[in-house]
Image 1 (cartoon, rainbow, N blue to C red):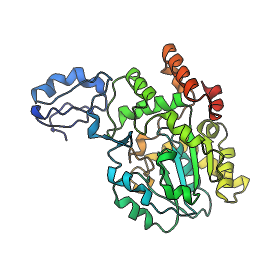
Image 2 (image 1 turned 90 degrees about the vertical axis):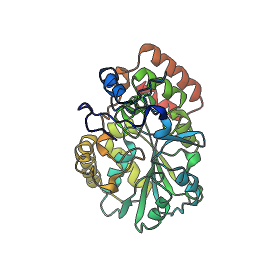
Image 3 (image 1 turned 60 degrees about the horizontal axis):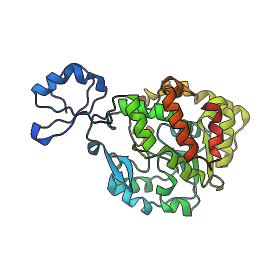
Image 4 (image 1 turned 120 degrees about the vertical axis):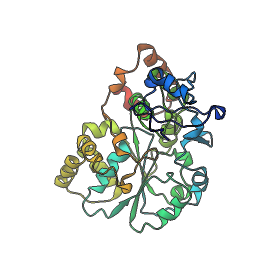
Length: 338
């Protein structure tokens, strides 16, 4: 809600009287000092938490089975996911949030495969209980995105061995990208500084929980025939090669010339340019945290983390990574990007 007389700044907040003790959500928390007096005169609270968060988390996030979810994913729907009826020809696109916009990228790739005859749905965990009926009504081969960990995946998907593509990205770049998402996305708590967000990310106190737990839950099933793990960095390095892996995994015959055409149409720069055009199309809602595609594509760069991590943060992160991923084969992939 906006008063209509506030400064001409891009600010998101919850309004109430002083007694309600509600807090304020900022798109850019640095505005706090400059307009604090204005809000105070109107009885609006701005409470700065020790973590640097500028919002009572409960207004945009809630916990389900110990994991933080956006309130855009209702508890009723999350509780009912095991009633989801998977089909053998379903394809699930899975990633931890901000893994290089990987789910969006692969969705674009699949959508450009000639005669694929698929229908991209919105995320399985986005919305309320009506989502299950909505998915049931879809008659074509469904491509369903999600940020769920393997442990939270509907049981019927595992029973039917539905095909799943899991996209993983260097956790340092993922952390930086998710930090910007927290700052720009009004569906997430505002965050003041990178240092504050870094601590939250290390603890797994972010939406969808710990990156380490998420990736490890999927790595346990890396040898399952119905699961393909794709690295974001490999897609950036050789998109055509990654497309070949995807089409082979899906059992779709595509010629080399068609693969090259798909690669041209689905380069990161092309997707970013097309995002604004498709922003109003609900069928292109692939992230369970926003329907605004302009928020999804940022830099997409590999190694941008080096511009954010201090030497101490790098050391602390590397120590945690070594501890958490000591038995992980996937961890070796990130050696060249750390």
